[in-house]
Amino acid sequence: MKKLLLSLMLFGLISNAQANEFFTPKEHCIGYKATKSMFFMNVDILAKGCDPKIILEESPDKSKFRVRVEHEFLKVDSGMQKRDEHMAEILEIPARGMIAFQSEWLSRNWLLKAKQKENITISGQIIGGKIKQDALFQLSLTQSEAGWIMAGKALASLDSYRLSIPTIGPFGIIADVHQDFELLVHLLLENNQDLASLLQ
Image 1 (tube, rainbow, N blue to C red):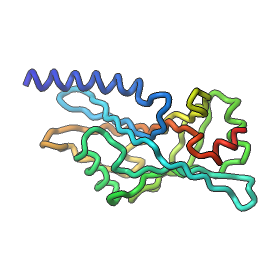
Image 2 (image 1 turned 45 degrees about the vertical axis):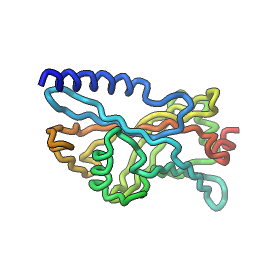
Image 3 (image 1 turned 135 degrees about the horizontal axis):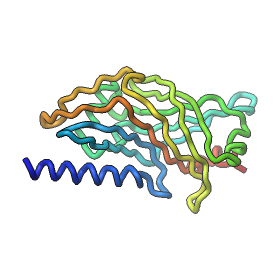
Image 4 (image 1 turned 180 degrees about the vertical axis):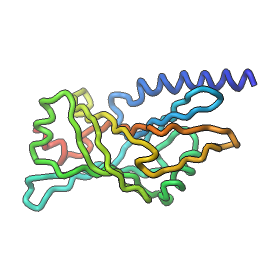
């Protein structure tokens, strides 16, 4: 038991360190952060999926655009395959099914204006399986050696997504997942040249 508790404590410390440095500067990824309580302590669950697809859709008159960021759900890796497969079942996402964020319609010069601000917001919907839920991302837009990076998070809750997570996890371990979780993005805009061109 002492060895088990020590392992869990070390895992908790590692998870917190990962949360502080979740994405490297050159990564093009999405992810999420959740927290669970087990053995009288809180443990972060961190999941990451890299190289999501960015799709730019323009309005017929070219005055507006919206962005869709999508990724195969089961390739968003939390470090435990059974947990990822279980979440896909809960969300009713089929094998090779996608999870996506689709933004609201934005004015064509929205990105140019965003360059002049420290913090920006973008609203839209998370879509995948049985989920179609509004989301508001708090973001920063910065330029680095890797190009323009849009990074930040959206706050969410199990209730708002109408999700119920069982307390019995893999191997029969009891773990209570907290209500609140975060959706995370770290996107290299150069991965879509049409989108990057709107910054010029």
